Amino acid sequence: MDINISHMVCGVLAESNPEQIDLFQMFFIVLGGLGIFLLGMKNMSEGMQAVAGDRIRKLINLATNHRILGCGLGTLITCIIQSSSVTTVMVVGMVNAGLMNLTQSISVIMGANIGTTITGWLFTFKVSKYGLLILGVSAFVYLFSKKDRVRFLGMFFLGLGMVFFGLEMMSDGFKPLRNYPHFVEWFERFSPSTYFGVLKCCLVGALLTAIVQSSSATLGITISLAYAGAIDFETGAALVLGENIGTTVTALLASIGTSTNSRRAALAHTIFNIIGVFWITLIFHYYMDFITWLVQTTEHVLPNDSVYEDSIVTYPYRKVAIAATHTGFNVINTIIFLPFIHILARVLKIIIPDRNVEEVPHLTYLDVRMFDTPAIAIEQSGEEVIRMGRRTLDMLNDLKQVMSSPASNNEIVERIFQGEQDLDVMQKEIVEFIGHVMSGNISHEVTADGREQIRMADEFESISDYIATLLKLHLKMKDGQLSLSPEGKQDLDTLHEMVKDYLILVAEAVDREDSTLLSEAKNKGNAVTKYVKESRSRHLTRVEAGNVKPLKSLIYTDMLRSYRRIKDHAYNIAEVLAGEK
Image (cartoon, rainbow, N blue to C red; front, side, top):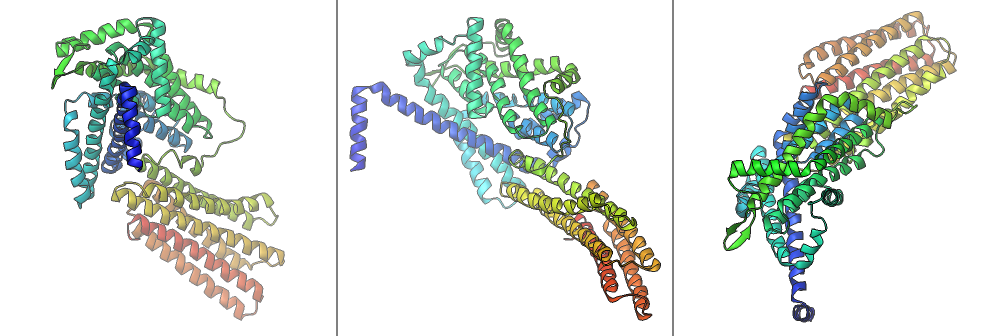
């Protein structure tokens, strides 16, 4: 019954307005093509990240204050990730975590603008008609391959096939538009023949990209419209310039609630692109003449020249011209801005001044920003694990200060208990964060790193618990007006220093990712265990002599046990680093 009714409705629509049913068909084809295109871009990005995850992590660690190196780094990473938005959001997250300063982030963002232009050139390949073939073959590789590397390469090419196929669908879907007078009349209002016409086109491109949240998607739509002949080269070029502004919205949204420097980095992206688009629009027609000359010189045709393919007119050289427009703009803009990075950083500090309160980077700020880049996300969570290790050392130093001072210091006591609570929260956040990261398509290496970090976070949290336990035992002894014998105090002081040195050894190894620590950790750990046993033996001798009260004896042995447990958990971390747990 429902099918008959739908046929009747379609028949009425076709009879009353034959153009309307064509528009519906066009909409469905374009929408389906766009969906396949976006999914393909996602698969390409995830597949390449899974294959090159370790290389991306090593690259990001090369970030320096050298502007050219930073720019090259941003370009290379974006070429791998296939999304300037993801790269920029990643940079915002790294600045927020304290892994990158403002100057470094600006140079990387500038490089990301160049790296994203490779997507436009990808669309110019004359293999779009083979998109389904690439998709089909890659799907079998992805589904049936046993090796991780081959499987994720298959995922990358699966995404590539989907991109080509989606682009072909959009191009076919847009072809009827050139025969619709209403569309032609509407777009004539945005003709870039005048300066205000150029600005209108830029505004349309910016708004569309801000809505879609993907400059690659809007670039694909623009190139599809131009290839189908629905818009000319100049209109497509103006739209692409506006898309450079729209793509900055993603980073601005990601910077909400982050640190001051993170918001500055996001704003730097916006300012950089807005100023670039502003000056290029002033010389728009001269720039178009240059691109036209460039295409004519290399392709021996003009961008707006038509070609008949299977008796259907297309405009393939508009693809090349639009890709060249996109690349040329970003390269020239970066060259102009690169020498003025420090000036831009100072301007940003005026626009977004420092806060009066100290800002502490927090893992929760990274949750939604880093999932698109698992390799970098694991790097971020690794920094949080390192921060946990440093926090336990601070707690141990504070404990020494409390235990060696006859006077009460409530501020330090509260700081130790607060540290223990903070590490509980940090461990929970790390586990949740890594859990989200590991739920995606990631390589075995990233999975192994994630598991190691979860284990180390658990060990550091346990160490903080025992430090808090030692403080409670000390306060219990103080409340009972009990004091240790000089011999017992000397043993505890020595043991404290041995455990602190041991924890420093392990925490620094975590920072360096040193997997050769285990032998040294085992020897020094045995020395700590031996000293605990000797201290307990000396204590029992004092108990037998009747020099120690029962409550004090119980507290003292619990202290010895707590120090040994701190050492044990630190040794577990050394085993994790060595790959034995």
